[in-house]
Length: 289
Image (cartoon, rainbow, N blue to C red; front, side):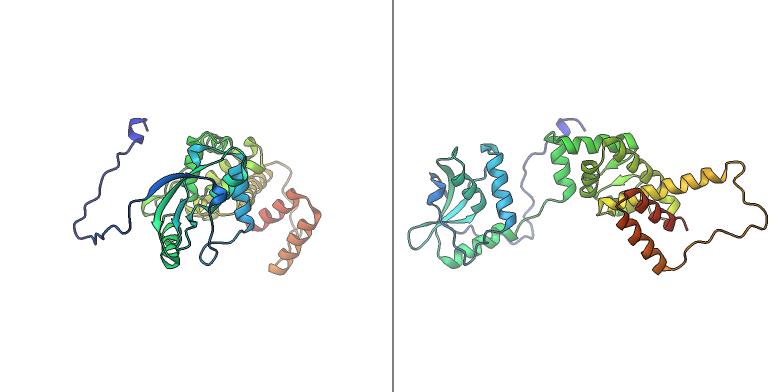
């Protein structure tokens, strides 16, 4: 896609048949405030959680005016300025020495009920970004892990989709579940990740999977399991073609454990061994039955 094709002008949608409401409230004002002077009403606001601390610490570690969204605040009936949306930003800026004042969008005076209603609107009435949308934004932003994932897939003959395929029409190697892909790239070398994706893209048909199955994998470890199962099957096929490997006529067949209970015991022993290859071979042998 050319740069010109990537741009889209903001245009109004047709209003015919839609319920068009009246704009409520006064026009907001933008003022610069010391973030430490803002207040949070926990009767409707979220409390501080471990996830909140992670986000605040991330903002402090990577401060940027370009990524700072002005907190939306309302004047309470007591004259204080209460944060409706953006308390994590306000706390991070109050903690960082580089932000003496920040822009604040003040929507006027609101009582408690109106503040809570506005809070719901900011946090409920929105479309969350899907993982694949976040991933492609990371690629555009030059994120090293995301770029590595793209290169890995291109080399392996796979492609990372921006959206789920229309009518579920996937082709072999299509990937939409980017979270396990990113986990695979981070936990393995680029070469190892490419080998895994390459085997997945070419081997799923042999196990009876549909082409879109790879796009539905949510755990990066399943990439490894399926890929190693495919490798095991390939190794077994190569062994059967080697001369001198045919057992003598009348030799009893090799004993193989039967039943789910034996298999679970095998997996348990493989996990206890701490050897990842032993575990993968155990799972692959099961898939090859």
